[in-house]
Length: 514
Image (cartoon, rainbow, N blue to C red; front, side, top):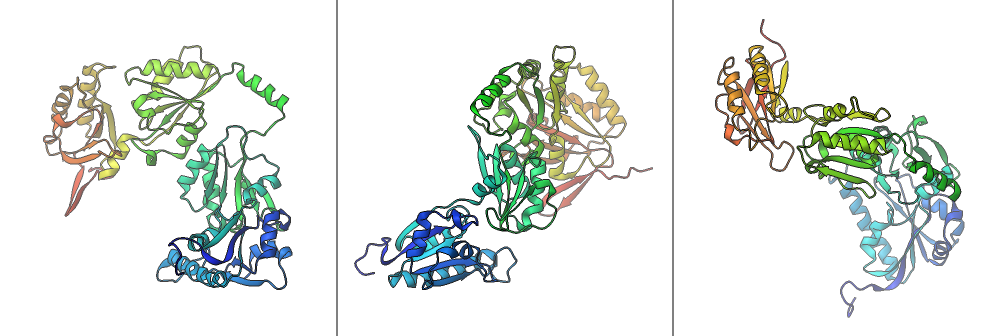
């Protein structure tokens, strides 16, 4: 428009993004009903079948002389043959539909775009807003959300006090859904339909399926509720899974009584949790759930730093050399009634904190404390996966640290393993103060192994500085090995497959020669 600043709204009709709520026409706000009644043009979305849920909700407030515009989506949840795919097909639709509405607005007509639920909560209106709000005077009218109506219908308080609430789309990967469901106090999962089996499985993995509620078409005449575990059939897109807070809201007197009971000493629990070798992608859903549910985390400070901080959750970090003290501290906290997670890198049962905790449990006054071990992906599994299957047949695992056992014992075990022709995973191969043991171990193995035996030198697996090298028993650089390194030594049958332009693959055949 001539003389108008770039980006300023054009003169003309007004645009209203009207949230019509979840389904019940009586849940529309007064402001929404006025905007609909006063508009010249009422636009509403529908799938390709042409039936609009938004129009059906708003029908009592439409005038006979309204100019109605059906915004028919070319694709919703089904597949598309559009050459640009789903995203491009929808983008072209929003572009064209927005221009159609812009013609009405430019002609001075007020346009109300109806949107199921709230316009800015997974609402289709927001895509029209992006294209039109900078060009025309715009008002967005919020509405009752589907999850609010679902909670009311279920009679289940959604969140209370300091609860953390999450809204999740069912289109997320199953592991991501499980992780979020485990960490939140309450949640809602939207966008079901074909995603429902995955969402249900994620709820089971996260440990929230027992209290989860399935709600279909909340507040409408077709509303349906059921415990999540009782829903086995296909579900419509207009449904959700509600995960309310784990504890019901209570009256002040009852709440005070519960708080008093909570302050009384009671036996707690300790979960020794394996974090995997590095990073969140290596963490199992079970481990995520335990970390999220714990009152406090205990562990080596470096490993604790890998767990995101959570409001209200205490953290007790310590040096790596005080495992016994750390284990006892965790048990003492649990004996006072706390739910404790002891974090451990890799798998807690392999040269890690599970044994340390159980050592302190034995013979001590912690009979009432429940101790569980939550497994994690071990460093040797992660390292082996980077090159193929070097541990594909019988293998042994040894730590070269002689801090807690004599070197003579380590040497005897290495000799026996080499003589038995087992593949070998070596933990703790060297540190700043232990530099001679690795060369001594190599010498023991070479009594029985060819110097050309394949060796995988894996350092910082899963971290940004990860390095993997395939070398030989006689040739690997011992001076470059440290505590972040794990060695995989092959047996006499271990093979290396050279790949042109790609890293080599290493495997130990499943069949051993007669």
